[in-house]
Length: 500
Image (cartoon, rainbow, N blue to C red):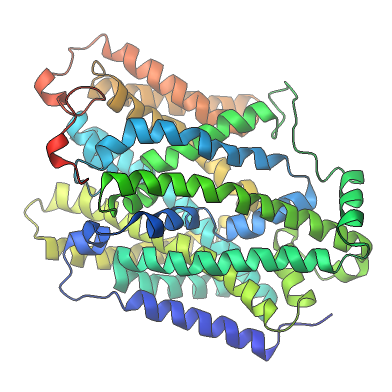
């Protein structure tokens, strides 16, 4: 088997240096908060839509999805169909507010609708959730660097975290969006090359690969089991996929901040539609690539002897089986995917910290330049913190489900609060907090006391938060009409602030 050649190393280094140079080129010493955090609100829907897709294509996906189908089957693919299902709801219910209120964070809206306490609690929950995600995102490509270089994983984690933090600190949100676009192109090329080359190396071609995959149960897609403990039942994946795909677009600052960069409401809507159109075909290709890898190594079991961790099967194949140069491109794609997600995650964490905590609680009179300066410091701090957390990320299990496992516990209550804010005029601030607390408790109990698929937990969290929050509010005085005017769907939305 071949290894990583000098040409491969050269391509990866050239790619990393190029991305750092492009990201750093957006550095402006006198940037305002609007420039640094939102790219001046001047971006069109195509780069933003691609950036939304890139947000889901970290090494967690690029490595974890093929590894899942390599080890199991393609049943998890049903999860991706939550994206087109959630689009009409997001466009109808949430976009009118997010595109018209000139927000920096989604949690500003919750303060206007409810109270400062709700804003602080939801922003803190987001930071916990996204912080865990970024840590896993740093960990995953570090496995690749370890395979390629032979260095310990912890050293690779320090390199990956430090490198991405550098250019994100300098460039801000514009660096995130435009490096996302570049990295999406490289990632797509890498995914296609893996799939194409794996099939090309299977004797008998596609017919044999199909027969072998069917015989091994690798192409099983629909699991109609009514047993709630079945992780990949259609019911768990469709309901859970709907909530887990809608929650980030409506509550996660890392995603919403991309939408805030668009120059109009129309661009905001088109970005979300573009994301849903791209995500299914590229996810499908990743699952099928894992199946092809299984068939290849089933035919050549002697060639998989050095694979210590099945989560790394795709880069292992790239390094040992693909021609020189192609290996480098695929490994660069894995790096690029994680760098895109990590940079956006750190930037959004910094935005939430700077705007929701520093500016709102510590220094309300801070100038836009001061907030941007604090943002740069915060970016470096968050990058270091997430790099430290990445050292523990390997304990969360298989990459394909590691983040969903974390997200399923907190996404439901977070989404429930936003739904209460947007859809109901009777819900109070304390009612929303009580409902979310009930949602977190019920999900924790369900996780501890049942063997249910964790994909049910996010929908349970939404249901308990919405019902509990609304019922609790009935025992309190309703919010004054003037406080919620223009902040609840159908109640005089603020057309004057539209960016159309």
